[in-house]
Length: 232
Length: 199
Image (cartoon, rainbow over all chains, first blue to last red; front, side, top):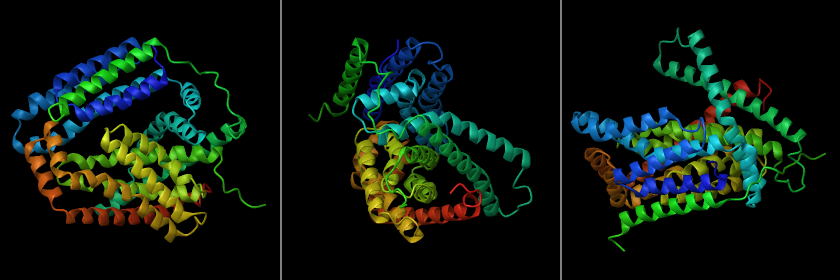
């Protein structure tokens, strides 16, 4: 089951809203189960078992491990565990959007919505560049490990500065070179053509999109009422 | 022939990639949220990375609108971080990006102007980002407690955010680290990027 890119965007925003409003773990578990089910229905490779397992580990850490740990350990871990766990619904929605949508489809839908090229081009490039950035970082890390750059430096501040320079500069150089190459490719494909782009990959929203949005809205309203119901 | 001062397709691509790196810097800086006392310095830590990238974006794309485009991906990141905080963060970042554009205008070769614009730009982290915690301390801390954060950590946060002059310290430290970031960015530019012929 593949949904429209706008549905995934709305789901991401609503899940972020639910995560900030909801304080009940049962509601959160329900939301997470629904999102994982949506991932499973979206086809092969969308559901990430490691992500689901990580979420379960975070929940168990918060509700089983932290209460029995010494106060100092609880203090150190609590904020990290809660903040990361709260971000999981958004993360699952981003995975849904990323794995189910090609960048061309997203650009087409955003252009059809009337969003300017000033927004669609940077967003499309940023999304497409995420795996490249990860790959570049791994290459730089491997190269630095092989060379053991900070071997002769004893001053800890100089070590940090040296590592900082050796990791960041190659990353900036490769990113800026990639941006030049991408720009040349895009210009040759007509990115600077002033004519309105045609949307070959545009797909209108269907019944399943509307049903998903209505269900997500209902859950958001429920979270809102659960939080502020007594005050209204 | 006069240089083109309008943003073109290739400029949007460069700004898109640097905007992504801006967001990655912010995510990496969130390591400061590990305890109640260090969380106050999240904006300052992030502003160091933003300062470096700000110099690069100003030199690589010296056109009006580059900073606004550079802010798009972090805005999306803010938007996914919750309802009120997300909207205020995203709107604040865009407003201050526009203010930075006004400071820079079309004279983007002056380091003083770039540093001033970067300091104004990163105010969204120290002023708008910390506004909720300093102005609505009880609401913010109660919400943190309700989400399951340790009581001692929340009381640390409550004690800290109740001291209102500390907000000024946060603003000053963010400005100082932005200054340090722009200085490092300038060094990286001169030592590496210009020599490599990238800028």
